[in-house]
Length: 319
Length: 271
Image 1 (cartoon, each protein chain N blue to C red):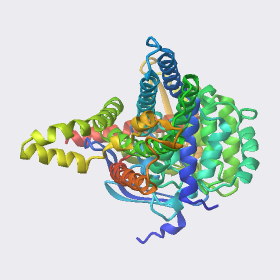
Image 2: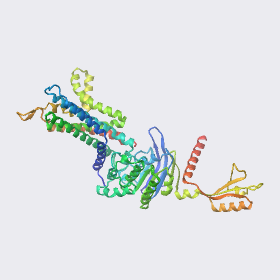
Image 3: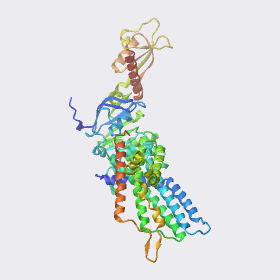
Image 4: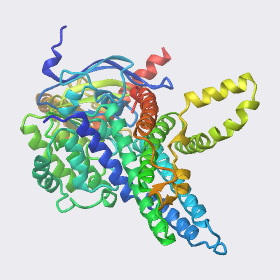
């Protein structure tokens, strides 16, 4: 299939990243991010997120495969002019003032002094750093450094924002403020690609997520696709003595309670299956203990997928 | 929104300079040199004549050592500190090429070296005023410039070493190079006639391959350049302009070679 990478903000094909010690950080991954899309890149520590992001910025070189950012090579100055990047650990020159930091990074992206003077105060204000323009960065807390990091990434109003560990070090208020800023950029058609350990960020901001584990992509889906099946109906019931489960209930794979004899749980994602099971159980005079709708969190789904992936790997190794 | 590499170089250099000036390390060197100079200038060996020459020579040597040490230490820590603090990531994510980054860093350290040398110049002239002597200003200006040319070589060398060995070793080796380069040449002029063919060859390699930093030191000329009021001249007049140009070119050629080597090492280094 021919892919027109000019229409993709990020195009990663068969990317392999190996370190000098032979360790494979990224193992043949492929994905694309369209213009205007907001994509969350999630995975456990050491999954390969930062290595992928660093390759996208030209900090690492692909061992195999290709990476195109805004239709250009990752290290290309033209692409970097249009990209805003927040590193995993945001540490800035401690003896520079917040204003000087933004003048440096904004200046490097081509903003002139007049433009910088116009942009810096409202940007710092927006990120909760109003009044800190003349404060040395060494006096900043971790959260303030993260906010400053976001400010340097977006000061030139880039088309594509790549954030590694988006809300690291931010308190709930800072997180909320950042969400508002990013949602505003998203509404302006900017492309956002970020990694985060906080799946709340992902759920709140993203159109799509990419899950990576041990250097491989284990799942890609839109948030709607992912969250829709995470909602399920649950029926907990007890059978009357000397009654067996009807076939229509057995088909729903009920699980037997190990502590209470004769107590079962049925889980189903379809509303009609739920209604049908209730009807069937009332027909045999089963005692309903609990009925309702449970929503599994994105975090639970992520953990389930990671465990499933590890189980598959283990099975493959045993074979 | 367009920016020239020259402007980017200046942005990087300015950051290095501001950081160097706001950090305390540089002032420790200046204060130590100031203390030592004050002590040397205050020595009075039973009103011995000519003692001021000895005093001024020591102060100039202290200045030379302190400037070399400052630029070596600052130069050697630039790249490792960028990596350790991870400040290199947001910087290199901007449209800055690696040569621009390296040259900007070198320029920043060099400007910090000029700042230190200016501080020492104030100390040196204040000491001269205290002793009632006056150095040959033209010669001192040439010494200032040649020391700065020497600094460009030391900065580029410390960049190379900091990319291949750890920070402490890079500082020690760079300083050792500066020290040996300044003393070996005079030692070799004595040893050379007594050496065998291999020894002579090695010494020729040393002289022609490595930069001879003693060429950039006019301290002795400054100290011994007495003013002759009867002829309104100095014992040692300032160097010819062509000599200065040749020395500058000689220094910058080595700097260019060393910076190129540093760039080759840094070019494909994963960040």
